[in-house]
Length: 184
Ligand code: FNR
Figure 1 (cartoon, rainbow, N blue to C red):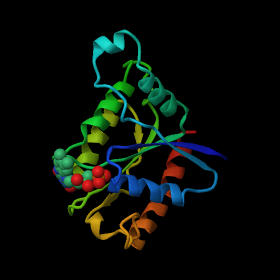
Figure 2: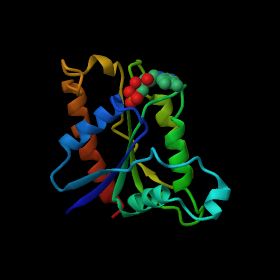
Figure 3: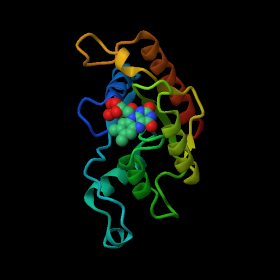
C-alpha cells in the first residue's frame, strides 16, 4: 500500500544538518513511500489580518500538502531551547481554522540534529506540545535526537555517514509506518 509522507525541515540554511538528516530518511525510505518536502521559507509571519483576506499561496500549499499526506515528519533544529520560529509559524498557520485544522488526527513524527549533546530534545518537546494541542497523533518513539552531528558526517561533510544514526533512522521509519497504519 502506497503511503504519502510530507516532510518539514525547521532549518532554512543550505548546509543544514537537519536537512542532511532528512536526506538520510529519503535515502532509506521504503519503496512504497512517496516523500515530499513542504517548503516553509516563503510563508509570511502569521497575522490574523492577512488570514482574514485569505490564505497566501504558500499557506494553501502547506495545508494541502499536510491534508493529503498519510503522515508528516518534522526534522528540526533547536534554537535557544525551543522550536525555530519558522517551524512554529508554519504550524500556527496550519492550525487554522481552529475547527477543521489539517493537523487534527494527523500522524506526526519528530526528529532533529544538533552539534550539542542533547540533540534537540527541548525543541522537540515544544513542537510536541503544540501538536498535542491540535490533536495530532504524535509517535511516542523511537525518538531521533542526533547529538554531536558535526562528528557524524562523511569526509567531505556532505552527508550524515554515522552507521548508528542511519540504523536509527531505518527503525524510526519502520515504526512510523506502523504508527500511521494504526489510524487508517
Ligand atoms: C542554536 N543552536 C542550538 N543548539 C542546541 O542544541 N540547543 C540550542 O538551544 C541552540 N540554540 C541556538 C540558537 C540559535 C539562534 C542558533 C542559530 C543556533 C545551534 C544549532 O543546533 C546549530 O546551529 C545547528 O547547526 C542548526 O541546525 P541546522 O541549520 O544545521 O539544521
